[in-house]
Image (cartoon, rainbow, N blue to C red; front, top):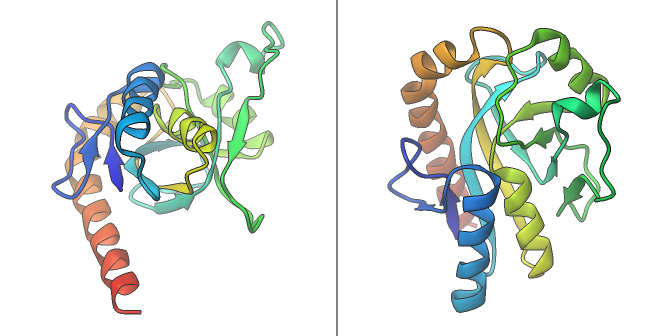
Length: 180
């Protein structure tokens, strides 16, 4: 099953699950309880902490939930803050998820030091729910912006093109898989 966030980030081939960590977790859990899918593929846009370029397509099966306070050593969590459905242990770009968008270039550099490449608001909850229900899952992302002071303006400027590129990529991959 292919899913996406919703609101202004929808695709004709994906089912919207909600924006942010909470909405997506609730709706994916509901989906799994009533009609458990065999596989979950999340499709969405992402901000880059600096290594990934605008309009890069990134596939991943690993997500983190690192809040900005953690980067300044003024917060901690007793919870596991990284989840992966990557059974082959292939090196993944780690996708950070938070209900907040990073707009500070200095913080972006700190994320890179932790090996985290991009951010998307929903992906951590997608993988956490998938892991709980033992469902293979992954994500495909198109970068819309860098995580700096221009993050929101660049996101708005690049969002439609990123969605189109993402749709082409996913449809191409589906065609490849069905021709095997």
